[in-house]
Image 1 (cartoon, rainbow, N blue to C red):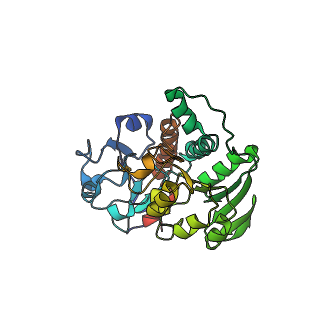
Image 2: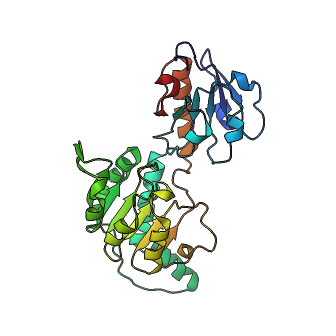
Image 3: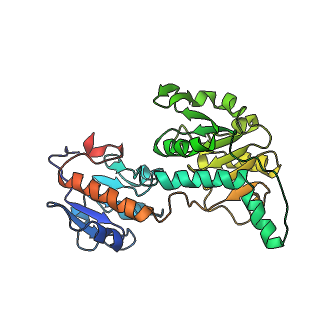
Length: 318
């Protein structure tokens, strides 16, 4: 494919009128049009489209994208980009919205930990049933937290955990030392799990991380340990996790699952010790202003012929 200087991005599509309005006034040299990927683009031919902002909610949009003959960039509104490479040609660049959801997803991780560690789910049930019970819950202070994922959101979770006086151990793709101390490699995960009270998962889903938290890792966790997943459902082996939680040996607080939506009759929905939220992680009131600010910066870079932010597949910017 041609290099960036000979193939500038001139026409960008966005999936909502709200985003289109937020990008105004556009920088000179670039035009934005409305296309939700369900209907037809409004104000541009398929052959004119250079970049597409993908809808926030997933959908079956492969056929729509295939009508764009020479797409330079597919821009996600999510941190995760699993599933997007399969929708476009190998020469199309893909950019994530890393950073937009970091605070909200870290907030969700902490919420799930606190809710489970302080028995808030049980308190809500007791409230509706008219029960008043004094129970000593484990809490967060002095707990051993194993954080799997040290990217942007992982760092935000770690920062929010520090005031709670936990014993934090971090795991990345490979062992190293960074400005915050030691990072263990995923090859140590089984051994590290044996010493964890809480396992928090916030690593991207890819070929290397699918079922990273498998039956062996789960079996290594101590009785009563809590598994928190705010990454992607398939990073954890759902079948193995269901067995452990349904038996009462482990607890789970999950914002994501494999598959999604979780079936209405899934045993985890009614299992004691399980808290399930329907993939709410980054979906807060902070999302809209943050994605708008991010896209304004991205559009400014594209209008200047510069490399976009957050490229996870480089395409024309190789």
